[in-house]
Image 1 (cartoon, rainbow, N blue to C red):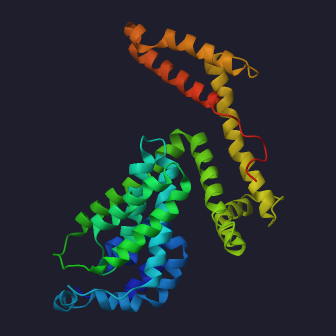
Image 2: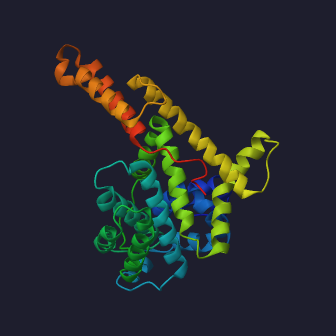
Image 3: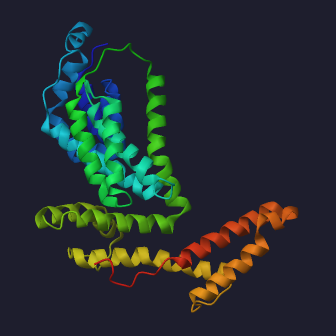
Length: 341
């Protein structure tokens, strides 16, 4: 069935940031990209206003014309390359926030997330790239920067360069039903948002701490480019500024220094609450020394170890995990105020 330009523009206006117009045109990869990035932060959605006629023409192109492009190399696109790097960094930051607790995260989880972000952009439209080579480049670079968040940038660059080197046109495949396409998109969306949602709702304090540290590390990359750093900082602060305008905060100002200070205090309040709960779980005073905390931890572990409480395994397991989490929270050195600067 031929796709209509007016319908495409209507879907672009109503649900553009969610990729409805791309779903209508059969551009499922582009739709998923827009779902995960809210239309490329809104900028990609607006820029598409002038591209929609070409998208519709491509969707209405006969099958024979599409097959004629197979085997040829697509022209190099600087915009696609930049988008691959940015989305790779974005996927890496999300993984760093939601999955960094995993063992061997910097060897497996981080390069996999960045590589998938790069491949997602590479597969937009009628193009794609080599899956193995792109992920291989990401996994080869990751051990060089093991344990450092800055690894996201070189991994994304290496994967993007490899994806551009192996770019090609997609081979034609048979049409699928809408239910199958929606099912596949739903699984991909849940795979991306599930770990982030779990970390946000089940471990809020740690997630906020990861977000603050990740943003700090990311902004430190731009220390040699002050103008670019200020622009990036303004983008990060935009949701916070909008929220303060909506709640009618009378102290609102454009002073980004004060805004970062308030954000830091907000995150730090969660950390303070977490430490207070940890003191209560271990039954020690807030002024307890590290030796006292460690001694009390060993006492409680002996009492509530599941092997010593086989008659009440579930309760012992719950207490045991609470004790371990509390000890871990109090074992981390507390950052002094102002360390975010």
